[in-house]
Every structure is written in structure tokens, then in C-alpha cells.
Image (cartoon, each protein chain N blue to C red):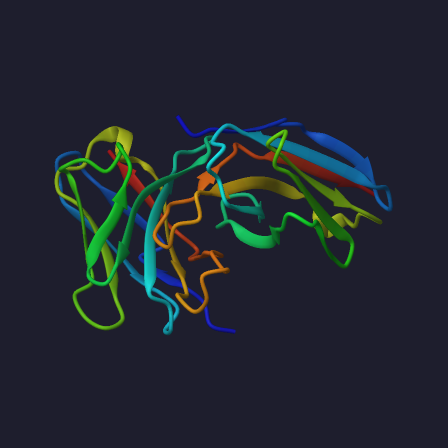
Amino acid sequence: EPEVTQTPSHQVTQMGQEVILRCVPISNHLYFYWYRQILGQKVEFLVSFYNNEISEKSEIFDDQFSVERPDGSNFTLKIRSTKLEDSAMYFCASRTALGQETYEQYFGPGTRLTVT
Amino acid sequence: RKEVEQDPGPFNVPEGATVAFNCTYSNSASQSFFWYRQDCRKEPKLLMSVYSSGNEDGRFTAQLNRASQYISLLIRDSKLSDSATYLCVVSSGGGADGLTFGKGTHLIIQP
């Protein structure tokens, strides 16, 4: 069964450093998403991406964040200057565009980001 | 502000029992509804979509009440492996729309 993959599984970085989180969505999916989950809190939407551009972003997704699809398979989230409060689990998700009736998103295993 | 509210639990239920969860959502424009389950420190996994007519998948039954803006999940003949956090999730239904998650209801099935 195809699945979303993410690397690394755990990233430790110092405050102020840049990090890039990587995702490989399911191969025939066309919509890509990033979410985060701070420990003990709910999953929060960050950004959606379709047709090589951002479709929607939340208020969390400020100028410190950027996304990119550098090639035909990878989807990345960059945090330019990490803060302590960026420590969270970051999930990538993807969705097929086949049929407007299906909006099911499938999640990767996540990257645990720890900012020290 | 779009919100999804759930009873956090925990629900402690003996194996074999039936358990029901509800959630309410605030955005009346929501079009798509889901239940995901999340095991400790793992990713959310899609359990089922929820349709207006209600739907069933094995031991799981989901119902949607658009007028009252609530969604329910019923688990029959619960098993130890059902222990998890159940996340109520809604979307406005647009192609690129992000999902709005509830905080989840923690379920513990006891032997």
C-alpha cells in the first residue's frame, strides 16, 4: 500500500538555525499539506500546496516558513530561524485529485523537531 | 474561528462493550467530515469519512447531523487494539482546504 514518507524522523536543532523537513507524498497525489502537533495539543494545519504554489496557509505559517516541491517527488518545509516554540511533531499529508467527492488526506509518520 | 470540540475523556471501557463519541463543529460551511485515530506519538490515520446518510465500516458506524453540527462515532464489540485517541476532523471541502482537528477523545479498552 502506498504511503507518505518523511525524513528525518527526529531533528534536533539550536534556536536560530534553519531546518528543512522532507516528505515524499503518495505518487499519484496532487495536493500536499503540512501540519504540526505540539506535544499534548491538537493537530494544526499549516499550509496546503497544489500545482506548484501555496493554496492556503494558516496564521501559524508566517514568514519564517516556506514550502517547496524541488522535484517530482519531494515536498519540503523550511523553517528559517527556529524558535523554541517551533518544537513539535510535523506531519506531511497528501490527497489525490481524482474525483471531487474525496477529500481524504493521508499522513506521513512525522518528523519530531526539537529546538534547544 | 473554525473549531471542533470533543470530550477529551479518557473513556475506560471493557473489552466487548459498545462506546460512542460525539463532536461538534462551529463552521457551518464545513463540507467534509472524518474520524481519524491517533496512537501515542504516531500520525493520524484515517478511520472513516462521514457521509450525510451515515455510514458503517465493520464495527464502526459514523453519523452526521448537519442541522445540529455534530458528528458521532460508534464502536461495537470493542477490542484491545481500539485503544487510541479518536480525532474528529472537518474540512470546508475545497480541494486544497486544510483539515480542522478536534483535540481528540482518548479511549482505553480494558481486558
